[in-house]
Length: 251
Length: 293
Image (cartoon, rainbow over all chains, first blue to last red):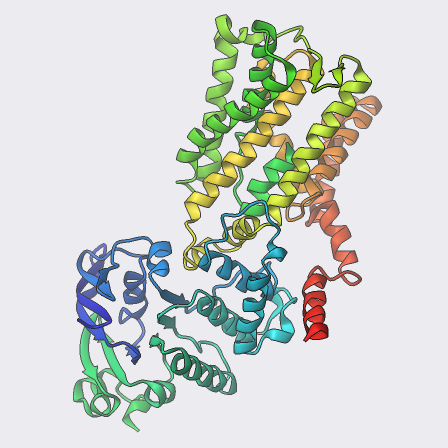
């Protein structure tokens, strides 16, 4: 069985079928993009895969274990990290504290109530290491809310990485970034996933990025998978071309 | 009490309107034990921690399932339930007469004789020490990994759950801790006043810590304590000065909230931030590492 297995997921909101029999499988170490026009169901799929939503039917399995229908905090503990389309950080905490709290959770030290946080020396070292990895080490004591948009996105990646995931799920990691910032971020993600052998599943609007880094692509349209395969196959697929009529994929 | 309350509101971001209930549970525990049984002062205070902890765990169990206004309303409802018990159950709680003449027994100190806290002055120091210890304890909790986790939940509950944090469990724990220490405050109050009445449990009393916290500064630790002092001082001075005290107090509060949205301490902190960076210890830590390596 594949590392991540999504099988026949159906999810409706009222009368709207957001996902219809969605299946896909991702191998360990793979970089997979999930693309589709706005409203195709990408974020819904992400939410189902990480426990925020329960599917009406179908199931998600990660490393052989069923993870659909269990709450997010338990999904995360199985080794999945997720970032969000709209930047999702702890605004009134410092950059350092943002990553620190993630590590406390990862090491299950967030239960200790009587030892001062600063006495966890290993955690302090680890936080600084993670911040160094994403290039935020020199900004550790600024408040997360005053960072530039690109830095906030990077901070969110740092928070996500701090929990040592085996599978990284990124919902539009470069949304709202300048071209320069997105390139940097993508290079960073590629580097990290290669170094740590991570499996990467992401959604993205920028087709240069999608075709530049992904090994396989799944295309969603109106809640259904209309194509699934390697970048070259996807580029040549007439249905995909139709869905993206006139967009840069037709280059 | 306000400091304990702020663990909920300021640190965890939960607004509870039922805090007076735990204050009452603590006060009645001490009052009833001392008048109806021969329990010593310290065991009675200890038991007040226990009873309010139990009350808070049961009430918290239901309340943390809700968010925002719904959470506040449910705490209010539970608070009034406890008020009703104290108010109506004459046989046990004395109904609206409350409990009068609570005897304050001397505290045996191991090998050092008895500590008499009967006089106003010695009582004052006793309360000061116990409250000081409680505040020190809460301060430590706030600076722990557990406290950091609560803060993260306040800032962004969804993100916190995506770090593998069981948000509800932590909110419940914070609720129980806050309730327990509010109970302790109630117990101390019973000792100090030597009489209690159901009024102290009424929901309008629950607004006091909310006001204290907002005046003092919601995101700071000492804020609520400063707010408590400000509120009590304002209250007594304005009452002495005019019969329209509620009006004047209201206006002062309005001005405080409008002009100092971060509270008195929030304001002071803002001014001090340029001189003292809170993360100074990380710098020192880095420095000490580079110095040794």
